Image 1 (cartoon, rainbow, N blue to C red):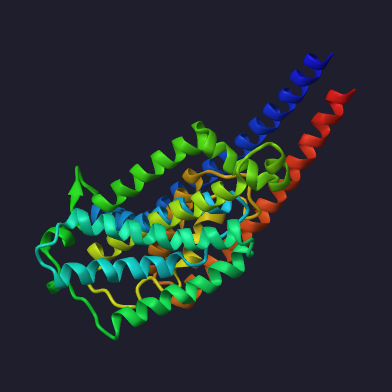
Image 2 (image 1 turned 90 degrees about the vertical axis):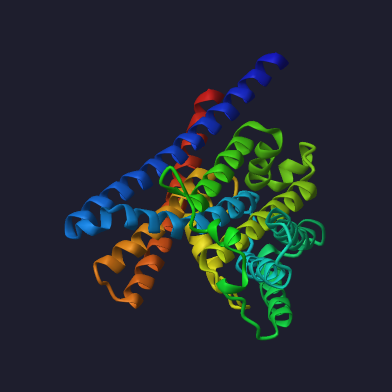
Length: 346
């Protein structure tokens, strides 16, 4: 009897997980369809939108946001959020650019590694505040958003690092292409594939979903919740540090204002990509597609000569629509799971 009950309960959990995964795939497919329609309509209105140069710019514009969205997803699925990512990007971008400008002979890989470590350290601060000190993530990361930016301003002291101050080899990282694909996009794709595989196949990844679904049950199940939350914030910070390197390499001109306000674009990409803002569901693939969709919309609106204020309003409307859709889908999934449990109980 006990074995039968255990198998029944396992079947319910697997059925629920399959249902949630199916909903996530539908959300991601919807984004792909939206991208296809957007490219088709805008390309018909302005054929220049479908040229190689235009598509390359879209990939470059979305690469950094996609990279940040992958890291943010790791945090959001644990029922938390990191508002400080833009400040971490700015801090690592300026720090890396300053080291390269003041020390011409320093190895570029060493600078990249240092920026990633700097970002990871900032993420560890957030993780300790949220996972160990139990400070609400919204409050903790809002505080570090300003704290890290303040450190950046103090470090910069009003100084600006220009492209002429940095080595050509470093700047090439932001513009070089491999088989026609920009290198930053390939880096974002590699990070996306690794993170997606880890979330889907490793125990640590599945435990992040368990924490977001029900933190109390995760503790009772023996999951080291604090450690996992800290690890998610550290990984997010490390990716923000890498994004800072990509920002400095691509734009060349770096000061203490780098990436100000970018956290809103990242959160919008995550939510539009189908990652539940209340945790427990979503994929990094959806978040990356959300970043690509938002970047494409921005480019399309610019091509169609839509006013900049209208572009902001449209992005805000998309974010609200994504949150409403996410809530409706969550209610539908919950109702379907209740019906399935009721049928199994009979």
